[in-house]
Structure formats: C-alpha cells, structure tokens
Length: 489
Ligand code: NAP
Image 1 (cartoon, rainbow, N blue to C red):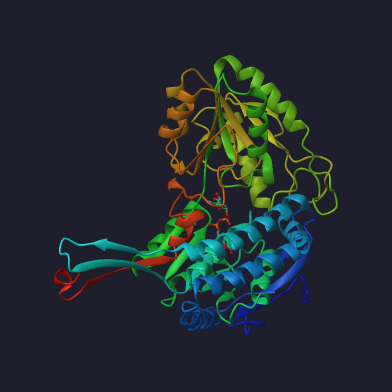
Image 2: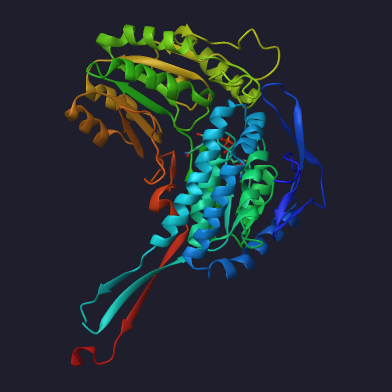
C-alpha cells in the first residue's frame, strides 16, 4: 500500500484520478472533531465515465470463469488481511469504533471475499424434464450487468465488502458510492482488489453525497442493479427510482430490534447479550437491540444486572486507548437523535436507569453514555423508531404471547432476539416473530453463509449466503427439442 492512506481520489477504469470539477468534502475524526482528509466529489461526468467503464469491463469480466474470478477475489482477501491493521486505523479515525473492533470488521471484509470466491463456483443450472419427452428445459444464470453499490458509515468496510463479494463473484461489475462520513476505509479496502489484479473498470469508486452522486448513479441507464444498505427513508426512494426502469434492487434497511428474556433463560448470558447488542458500536448497528421485554418476575433483577454490567463499559478515543469498549458516535446528529429519544421517553414516564447524557470527561467528540430506560411503553419513540444510538428501553411482560405481540408491534422486521431454555418457547418464538432474522440464546443474528435480509420496512432482498450471490444473477430458461429423441436409444 504505497499511496497516501488519506487518498483523495476516485477510481475510474482502473486509474486513481482527481475529479475535474467541484470542491472537496471533508472527513472528520468523531473523537476529536478534527478534519482528517478532504476528498474530491465526483461530478456527473465522473459518474457517467465510471458507469461506462463498468459497462466495458462487464463484457470482459462476465466471460471470466468463476474459478478465475475466484482466484482474484482470494488474492484480494489475502491483501486485505495483510493490510488489516492499516485499514483498521483509518476506519477508527473516521468512524470512531475502537481499533480492535475495526480490525474485526476489516477481517470480515476479507472473509466475505474468500467466501464468495468459493460460492461463485457453486452457481449450478438445472435440467428439467418436460411433459414432451423430446424436450428439456435448461436453466442457466447470467450476471445482471453493471451494478451500483451504496452503503452507510456504521460498518463502512464490511457492508461494501458484502456487495463487492457477491457482485464480482457473480460476474457483475460495480460502481461504488462510499458513505460521505467514512469514505476512506472502504476506498483502502477497494484498493486491495485493484492490487490483486482486478481488470480495469470492474470496480469503480465515485465519492460524493448520496443526494447527488448516489442519485445520478442509481438513475443511470447503464446500471442494471442497485445494492443499497441504509435508512428505510432513502431505501424507499431508491426502490421507486428503480421501478420505472425495472431495475433490480436490493435494500437492507433500518431495524428496531427486540430482545425477549424469559424467566427460564440463562440469566447471566441474557444480561451479557443485552449489553453487547444494545451498546456495541454505540448502538449504531441496524441489528442493535433497541427494546427489551423481560418477564415480570425477573424484571427488576434484570434491569439492575444490566445496568451494573453496562457501567463497566469503558468509553474512549479508540485510536489511542486500547482498553476502551466504545468510541464516540460517528456524528453530532447521532448524539442529538439519542437525546431526542431519551427526552421523549422521560416525558412519557420512563425511568432513567443509567446514562442519558454526554460524558463529562470529554471536551470534544461525539461521545454519549450508554443509556437504559426502564418502564418504557409503545407510545415512546425509543420503542417504535430506530434510535441508532446507545439507548435501550425496557418493559415488563407477563405471557409469551404478549411478548411476541409487542415484539411484532413495529413497522420494522430485521432481527429479533430471545433467551429461553425451553425448546417449546424457542420454537414458538422462532416461528412467530415477524422478522428476517431470529437469534435465540445469542445476539449475533447474521453469519456469512446464511441469508441475511430484512422483512417489512427493514428491506427487500438478501446479502450473505448463496441468496446474496443470486441477487446479482438472472435466470435464463432454454427449452431444447431434440429431434427424434424418442426413437433413439
Ligand atoms: P442513509 O442516509 O440512508 O445513507 C446510506 C447511503 O445512501 C449513504 O452512502 C448515503 O450517502 C446514500 N444516499 C443518501 N441519499 C441517497 C439518495 N437519494 N440516492 C442515493 N444514495 C443516497 O443511511 P445512513 O444514515 O448512512 O445509515 C444508517 C442507516 O443504515 C440506519 O437506518 C441503519 O439501520 C441502516 N443500516 C442497515 C443495515 C442492514 O443490513 N439492514 C446495515 C447497516 C445500516 P451519504 O453518505 O452521502 O449521505
């Protein structure tokens, strides 16, 4: 990795170039509020050139065999691992999460490239017997074409890696619009693919704001599929934009994820899971636990234990403090939204157990204390909307049916969590929670080789697993009549 890590360029047709137009946009360190880089913003011409280069490259890349594509993806995965620490430092500097968490994220980026290098070789067609014995139906899969990848700032490397892995393994080419708050680490990740020998134009990068660069990209006729992760509000707009051109689109959107804790559960495991999934990455995770329903006979004990455990979390500048569990939030906006949800809940009768404010020991940075609100109810924003901050509401329940009804009583359906040692309750929960992902007795709702997607307002389509690859493929039915087959042996 020879280039300035704060690279200020965009990638078009295999070349790192400066934009011919407009000013730069700045990237800030959320722990210090210092500006750490300025990047060129792609112009409409840059986006059009990037799409053209993806169209040209598609003619070549789609003809590569899956194993040849896999070889380059595996090489890229290896380069990412070699540069893991360097990429992670920049990721921490622009996003805020502690370096150990950032290293884990970059490693996941490497893992997904390797996974899809293998999975790309397992795209099998089908031969289907017809009622007429002379005729066979063959089903084969084609890559959909040049794709747009648009992702958010909370996991800037991992979320773009999911799209890159699936798209490239399928034989598609890409134009990536990285998130404006955190464009540096995804660009460094993409540089690993270029350095692994990816042909020019297979991946292109156009930094800039979603409302201009992102919009131009999505509307470009050369783009045949849009892979989006972000807010429900923007996701709905993009689906509408794609509809008129019958453009394929997958949207991974916001969550409002419940945890149900039954009185027969492993209590300490449930408390540990609740703390980890409510506050990790300062709650800026689509599958963060936003609301917890605890069976009434263990309600007060659970709140006390969760608060005690949450108080042990160390908040710090993840770049210089190795011991910290949590960094700052990524922006001032996130802090303001957390404060708004807390004010709303307290105004409606919630009880503040811990947190609720910015910590006093930081004069700069977007730090916020992990916050637990007890005695919450569904009139409160914290129980209905996505806070995307370190804030969780807790409520007591009496029966499992009531808990399931409460868990389902939101417009989102991304992930649900539950702790119980009863097989019957686990089965009832898994089957009745209306959500794309259900995790029982653990709080890791996704894994690389199983489909990950949201239901309801949490999205449409999948990432991870074979399903994540098939999002970039379209089926072709070929019906062949073999002359005189019935007469031949
Ligand atoms: P966002 O505002 O929707 O932005 C996501 C991406 O879309 C960014 O790159 C953004 O660019 C771009 N964008 C914004 N408006 C656009 C437009 N009109 N056309 C094209 N692109 C546009 O979301 P965010 O605040 O960055 O991320 C937080 C949200 O992502 C949360 O709701 C979270 O739950 C969700 N999320 C979901 C998953 C999942 O897997 N389901 C995973 C992670 C996060 P700019 O950066 O320039 O604004």
